[in-house]
Image (cartoon, rainbow, N blue to C red):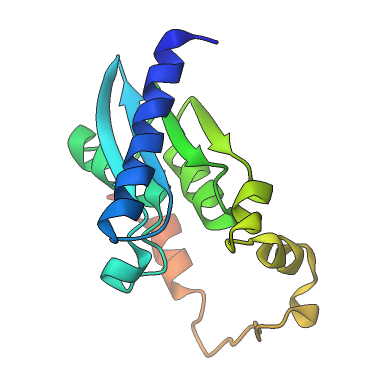
Length: 158
């Protein structure tokens, strides 16, 4: 194993351990590394902040993007103590790091009560088969924001 990568993974794991022992949240930690330096750290703070999006990876991405002054993490690598959940996978793809390394698997997480399988199954279903109602609602001029975006000369594409 690459000793540098192992060092970074140990740091992500230690964040997760500290989060549990401090009582601040779940057993998840993540770091973002760029050019040999940690530019973002995150722990699971869902219960601390009453924020279901406050997962370790999202927290680390937010801090790294703030550090860089950018919404993209090109040239960076994310190390996380556990395989990212569907929400975090989406955030990671939007952030565009070069790679993601994880320690525990989603099966390991499920074994201690963090089971995302339901979400994976729901995403695979057609909208009308999902347990959460999701239906289009199209009032007059519903496409106006998209039309404004398409016509804008001041937009910053991403």
